[in-house]
Picture 1 (spheres, rainbow, N blue to C red):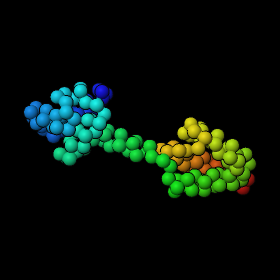
Picture 2: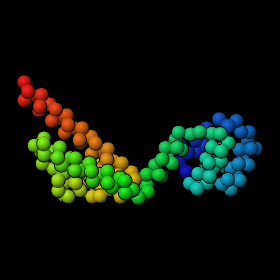
Picture 3: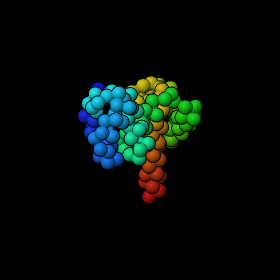
Picture 4: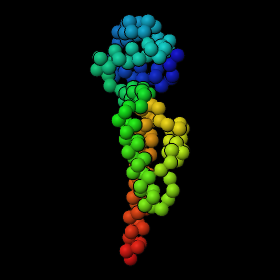
Length: 154
């Protein structure tokens, strides 16, 4: 069974495509083998939405869901190297700021756990969370260093 939001999306698509009742029921039956949107399962919903998109319907909600599915793949080698490079930058930035961290594997694992609840990022989505967290942390260290340089200059 699909959610109420998904059923509503099917009806929005029907309305925006200006489908009459007979055409709508024919598409439901052809794509998912059901007579009503309430009887759709996940696979049938996906097939139906692809058909609606082929007919010209665009849905931001369905696109977000597709993007989320793309994030489920295994972490890429590029992401792994980016994470390693950012950890090296974080280690030097934290040392310059006079704060411990990021030079040991334990500190890196703890950071990863805070970002994606795993010791090491495993999916594309996990890697994105860790990389964005690393960038934010680097920004904080940079701002902290700039503030301390300004204070020392005065």
